[in-house]
Image: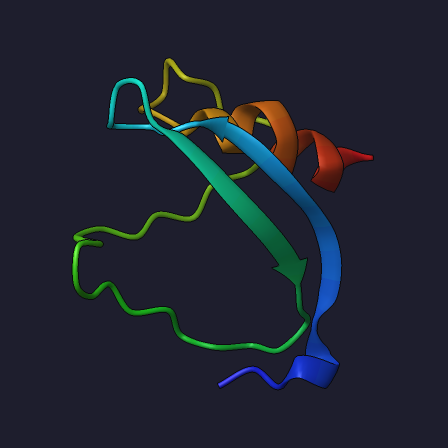
Length: 76
């Protein structure tokens, strides 16, 4: 588990949902240096590490929120 004190705000954004037409998502994204082992559960069936400086939509489908906001914020 990650404690609140270990989080740093990256940003809050609104974007089109990845797999639901005509749906908008609001996201608040945090950074942390805490090392954890992520586990897929519930509606998440697969996890994949992505290099935000090299990933493109051609590699595999990516959420608009990642491409338009999160990856650029990480690169800044």
